[in-house]
Each structure stands twice: as structure tokens, then as C-alpha cells.
Amino acid sequence: MSDPRPDKPVEPTPLDHAPYAPSTGATLVAEGFGTFLLVLGVISTALFAAGFGEGTEAANKGVGFLGVSLAVGITVIAGAYAFGPISGGHFNPAVTVGLAAAGRFQWKGVLPYIVAQIVGGAIATTLIVAIGLFGPDSWLSNAQDGGFASNGWDSLSPAGFGIGAAIIVEILFTALFVIVILGVTHSTRGTTFAGLAIGLTLTLIHLAIIPIDNASVNPARSIATAIYGGPVALGQLWVFLIFPIVGALIAGFAYKALFDGTQKAGATPTFESNKK
Image (cartoon, rainbow, N blue to C red; front, side, top):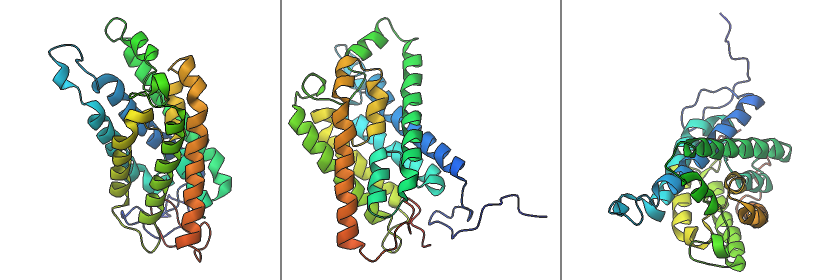
């Protein structure tokens, strides 16, 4: 009986993923699902659980910034191992661009990945809004009036930081995030624990910068919340589209020049760390 999977065989991934190359459609669906999981996990935690019980005797039930940081890390770990062997597990336009800059991903695939990521994130926040429609009185309007966990500065910064701080941290921490990804997914120097390392790094980043600008380092996440966060969130969105991409490009080109100068462009998918 012939093999029902017609795709060409490839080497197994470190996760013992079945050695068949997924179709383009499958990779885009996986990117959408992974981004959906990431945004749903972190924004649900931020809106439903972070400040739960504030101003009441139940205040200690809220998970706070620590809980939100852990939520984003856990969802990335889960998504990386679930969808990484299919799509590479980017779940973030900045990561996709950074990988392309480093020669790990083909530039022609960047736009379709970004579209899938944005759609996945937007579906996640739309479902959160649907849940909010059945919440306590004024819950949804209060969440939207508060920016809907959108990224921002001044009034949208939890600690009141200005635009300059938001620009610096988005460049700096996105660059560091992409450098870690490039290191742990390298074809020869990478690790089978790449998903864990990436998730923990993102947790650390959120612990550090949530008070500054609600921690983006991911334009798809920023778009997903801004569309429900009101005019201020939408007006500030440009910072979280441009500067994570700037940081990712710096990281991608720098890593390629410093550590990957002889690696064949396009040789390594993101999360799988295969040797082609």
C-alpha cells in the first residue's frame, strides 16, 4: 500500500517528529494556531486573572505580572512543541523577519507567515471579547477603556514610562529574544530543549518590561489587543510594529555575521534545528 503522505521525506527533528515535510498550507495553519494560543494565553491571563479581586478581599487571588509572564512562557513552550515541527514555531512577525535576516528562513515566506500570525492573534482577542460579553456588568467596557492589555506608553504604560523607554526596550529585548532563538535552534549547536529555552526567555523578558510598555516584542500580539483597545492604543501601535522588527533585523544580521558566516542561507528551519 502506498504511503498516504506524499510530501518529500526530510530528516526527523529533535522531537522525533514524523519525517515528512508539511505542506505550505499546513505550515501557515500551524503558525496561525500557535499565535492564537500565545495571544489567547497571555491576554486572557492579563485581563481575567492578573488583577482578579483588586479592591476586594479576594485581591490575593490575582496572578499579577508574574502570572502573565509565566503564561506567555508556558504558551510559547506548548506551541513550540505542538506546532514547531510543522511551521518552525515563529508565532511572531519579528521572529520571522529576524530568522530571514539570519538566513534561516526564506524571505518569500515572510509575508504569508506574518498574515497567518496576525489572523491567529486577532481571532484570539475576538474570542476574549466574546467571553467578556457574558462577563459581569461593565467588565468588557472597563477592559476596553483600560486599553485591553494593549502595549503603549504614558497612559498605557503600567508604570507611566514614556515613548523613548518603549522604543528602547522593544528594540533591545526583541533583539535579545531573536539571538536566543537563533542560538538554541542552530543546526549544529542547537538543543532539543529549544522550546523550553525560548519560552523561559520570553518569560524573563515579560518580567522585565511589562511595567514599561506591557511587553510586546511581537507585533501580532500588539495588533491583536490594539484593535479592541481604543483610539489611544491604535494611535500608539506604530511603535510596536516598527521597533520589534528593527530589533529583530539587528539580531538576525548580527548573528549571521558573527556566528553563522559560513552557514548556507535557508538551511535551518526555526524550531526544528534540522540539518538539511
